[in-house]
Image (cartoon, rainbow, N blue to C red; front, side, top):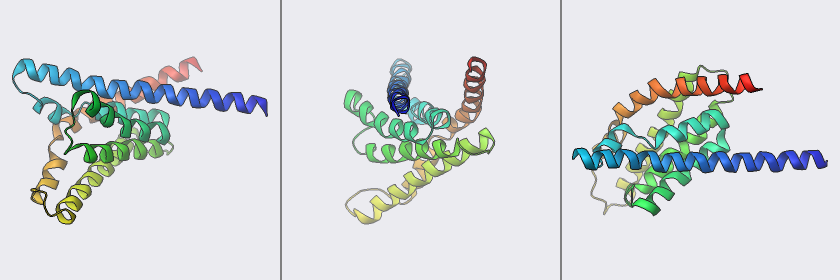
Length: 185
């Protein structure tokens, strides 16, 4: 009984550490992109196109499961908004939902026998679909929002280049980290 309690405390502490590190990466990485955007004159367009906050959240879900994934997905945009006003208040609820769904979905999919790229693709589709549905819901339920239904499609397609980068980078990082884990196990 006592051994189980110690293991549970270590597991909770490990999850908290993973969440904290993921949130830190998900907040700091976009700041790097915003700094480059400020220097290059592209402003926030670089971050909007490359989606740097999404990478740590997807990795967290794929590597550590749904609890760490969803916590990192929800907390990352909230903390980022608190420290940098990015994402803006208008975009914050949509990002919290999208990244939360990314983390949750990728976390559940991490427990399946699906190919790594398939897990990533399904998580991306779920997160983007949740965001599009939220935007459409906001447009139709909150009639005073000045958005056209086409805005939902724009939110989905805005980061296509970032999604391509995720396809190239995330499966390789997951494989590398899992291989390293297996070597030390």
